[in-house]
Length: 144
Image 1 (tube, rainbow, N blue to C red):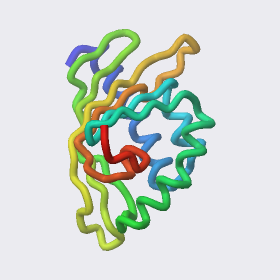
Image 2: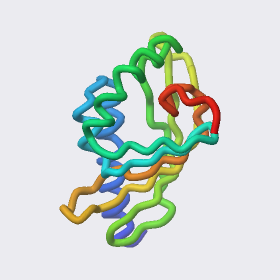
Image 3: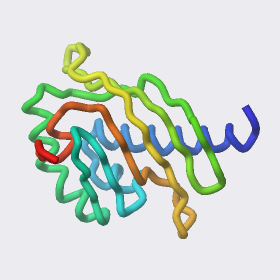
């Protein structure tokens, strides 16, 4: 792995791990800090655009309720592979597992995340394209 690719891998990994830590702790500000905005997610045939940190934070109470209704307890990052990297953007292929309290699998899914460096030199997750089938992935939207 070239030094630049390795540096970008480490940057993307830190950002992803920071987001997952916030997600698992239901730390809305921590999750927002790991994003660049506007943020877009494509899942279940739906695009969800989150324009800013306040909108993300406001949506998370609903997401928390949906996760609990599904039996979610925590999410684990299984793999992270940088597939493309440049000076301001990293494309990363990831595999996550959403788990119940007994560590059994609720959802296992692949996803492509784009981590960007914005004009303020902040690295954050800007786009996620996911194969997750949970309604929580789309804030409850079920039709395109």
